[in-house]
Amino acid sequence: MSHRIVIVGGGAGGLELATRLGRTLGKKGKARITLVDANLTHIWKPLLHEVAAGSLNSSEDELNYVAQAKWNHFEFQLGRLCGLDRASKRIQLAATLDEQGEELVPARGLEYDSLVLAIGSTTNDFGTQGAADHCIFLDTREQAERFHKQLLTHYLRAHAGQDKDDQISVAIVGAGATGVELSAELHHAAQELSAYGLTGIQPQNMRITLIEAGPRVLPALPERISRPVHQTLEKLGVRVLTGSAVQEVTAEGLRTAVGEFIPASLKVWAAGIRAPSLLKEIDGLETNRINQLVVRPTLQTTRDDNIFAFGDCAACPMGDGSERTVPPRAQAAHQQASLLAKAIVARLEGKPLPEYRYTDYGSLISLSRFSAVGNLMGNLMGSVKLEGWLARMFYVSLYRMHQVALYGPFRTALLMIADRIGRSTEPRLKLH
Image (cartoon, rainbow, N blue to C red):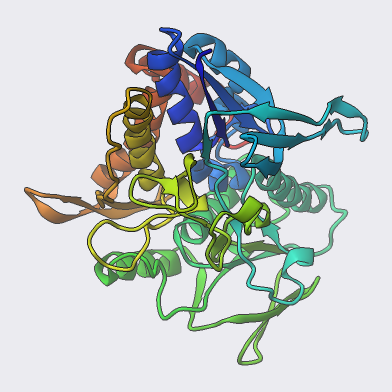
């Protein structure tokens, strides 16, 4: 019987791993690779802020798991992980329901020889009162599209004269990459909506407030990067509040710890992450305070050599001798997927597994069409700061690299040509 490899989670890392293993082990019949995800399609998570603003039509940039599986010699199973039995090497998938609540796919179990958990993370509201009830999180395509529909509804009502308020207020909690990029993208969306004739709300009347509990925006990046980003946001008219922890969220707005009330008709929570609560001590596996599975440098869980975890759902040591863990970033998931593709081959051949050591290649932040800024890091050049057009090109290249890993260089080139043609024949903003 072929070695059964089950990968749970079709995000950037899980999908890249399934694709790599399918092209090597699956194609040659050396292993049976199964990818499990609760959705039928994949969209790169760093693009969700563009979906929310309407700058990206998610239906055009999504990838179908069933087709990807056929093209790359692995299997796809629709389902959501709900249980694990390590003794029998079996995972349990919950039943999948359709929009009417009818059972679409029944609950079932899947057996494995090697299990890889790559189920990502969700937004952490830190138990803030009212956040879960009144804020939109940007963890999934559905949440991003929900925000876009609410935004468009405000504009359509104002355009039709049904809404007497000629302004819209948006509050974004968390000035990390998602919050910063969403702020700039929304400012761009306001200009585009006005250009298309939805003039009930003028661009200057979209009031965007970015709220950060820490002392500066982009706290995970060097200050020489965050400072110009802060200045650019303020030039765009975004109100940036740092050192302002949100204490309560209501239907009308947010209240900070110092008592300031910020009115907001649309509220987005983009601060902090945690792994899904399902992972907390799942069948005895070790987890940390934010539900991440604790793994060794080989990416094997500490209590079961047959179970691997990587990406945002795993607490992996940096590999530099410190007690720090790998940051939850797309480049880390990409690096770990590449290492695991080699490690699982080594596992099948009875060879020692390679160990992961995080390499920081820098960070890039896109401020929509207005600017981009970031730093690239390498052994030869150290840390190099990038701004403007060059930074924007490097930022776009990150997504193209993800596409190359999934589609190969030739199909990615065709997609780039199709994108270029599409921009000349379609609206620059999703208007539905």
